[in-house]
Length: 286
Ligand code: PMP
Image (cartoon, rainbow, N blue to C red):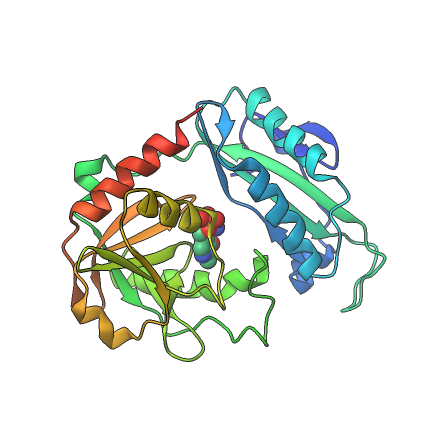
């Protein structure tokens, strides 16, 4: 991934992709003091760019550091990287981390570094292909208690259990894993939020210990505009047998129907299809 052509914005400068290095003694690498964003540009414009930049700043503050570029500067830098790489539709990855001036748990005086890269990430399937649904395992690891981690931060460290869970699921032939929360209730997937349907309404876990995704909020809004009822509530795993449809939402996943979660079966249907189509229309509306 590091030997591509193109440009990466790093600490205020556009660098050739291959030259965007950091030192091996970076605090972010050793102690997980790193936050990032995941965004998509459609037709050259980043969807909900400002919301992502604001979340990027908040994520850093929750890890007790401040991104040394204003929201406006990050906004301009992201658009510059999209444009300079000649991208029309792509994935956008801002990342910020503590640097290498201090190598101990405390690192108040380490420089904060920021980089922004973009790359191709086409939507995986066409609508009909997606309507077959993906298969999910149920992860062994749970989302941590909000008292044990800054769960509203898109912090690199919080992805450790996601990677382990996703690998375990893929080893068993699943596409991803649904994670429970620290109390054993349904939470989310390793990089996307989860929704269910019943009696024409949507049910989704309350985002009280995991990322309240920007796509999640967008899809809730799209559903409400369609007059579809939305229930954000606590959902136990044994309730899954009573739902008809299941789908995931996320910048990467967009709206992705699910056909299986562990022993439970779902049939992607009208609500998934409608929201998939409405989401596509929404992201391309500019
Ligand atoms: N949960 C996790 C763990 C994620 O990584 C993501 C993707 N950022 C989401 C939920 C969905 O967030 P968003 O819709 O803002 O991309």
